[in-house]
Every structure is written in C-alpha cells, then in structure tokens.
Image: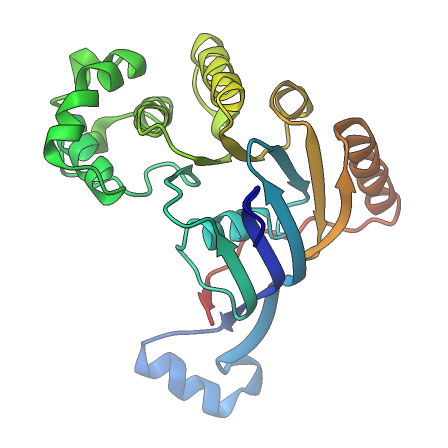
Length: 268
C-alpha cells in the first residue's frame, strides 16, 4: 500500500445470510413440516461485490446509493465491525479511526452521558488521563452539560448525535467515518459539524461520508462513489457523481423498481 494511501479495498465482498420464517417456537417449527412455505429458509445476500477502492490521505469521499446498496456495510468493514467475506481491506498502520455509523452504537443505555463518553473514548484507545484531557471540550462541543449525568436512554436521537459527534471530533482521528449524521439534530449543530469536518480536511484528515443529502455531500466531499447493488457504479468528481446518481434514481423510478430495505441478517 502506498504511503499516501490510508484505505485500500482489494476485491472486497461481504456476504450475509437472510433467515426467513425463523422461529424458536416448537409449534411453528412443527408447522413447517406440514407446510413447506412455512419452513425456515436461508438466503445468501451479497451486500458488497468485488469492491476495489483506494482512498488517499486527506481525501473526502461521499458514498451515495439507494437503500441496501452497501454503503453502511463498507463503513463497518473499515471500522472493523465486520470482516470481508472475501478480498482484503487494508487500513494505514496506526491510523486512528473515529466513526458515527449508527446512532447509539458504542453507547450503553443505562450509563450516563459522562460514563458513555469515558467508555467510548476508551474503546478508541485513549487512556483515562487522555480522556480527562478532552472531557471538558467534548461536553462543551456537544452542548449537553446539563444532561451529561443523565442516563443516555433518556436522550433524544438529536442528543445521541451531539454526544457521538462531539466524541468523534475530539478524538482527533486520522480517518472519520460518517453515516447520515445530518439526518437528526438542529441546523446550528449540523453547521458546526460541517465546519469541524472542513477543519479536519484542512489538517489532512480523511473522511468517508454516507449521505442522501446532496447539499451536505457538496459541502464536504471532493469525490463521489455511487454504489448500486453492492458494486461501484461510479467513482469520480462530485458534480458528475451526483448527476449519475440522479439519473440512476430516475431510471429505477421509471422501471418501477423499489428500494431494498434492511432485513435481519447474519454476516458470514
């Protein structure tokens, strides 16, 4: 991998198993013996297929695509939440990764905001002294000082986003993974997030940003990758990438094709 490369996907694929009619109830399982259509079945679903992608240091890439196209799955591979089913995904050695992939991931609902801040930062490898060093700045950034000692299960989705992004921002990561972070939260905080991301880019950090919001992609990214059914359909500049995506949506709409929605799946 080149010294200027921070992420490299080499023919990466990811497979999940979708279980249909699954049940632990004995009577339901017995019913399957009598009625074949009621039996549990397992279907292979390839969320990503042969992805080849190189991300350079300091790049801001927007991943766009319809629901089920593999965007979030790719971020989870980079974050090491999942492993590829085949191929290799390489990340620069000692690169610190901060992610906001799903609201609440990494947070324990019964713990307070303060406790979750310490826990989340510790998971990212910070020592207690280092966490104490960023604690005040993180709380100030989040704007949640009055709620920091309240269990996080009482937080709204916007408050979750505030705390999660505040932690990610103050970890000073080399790679920042963002998945639809502007879907919640007020306009002022969203603008502050954008300014923080732009500051990261000015300091040579790498951003991978998943969003359906054109304005946010334009504000942050200089490159767009369009994913369609787990494959890269476009990789290039923002204007052409978003135009390609709009054309893809128009084609699918004209053909009456529906978007794929998430299903319960087991990774393989």
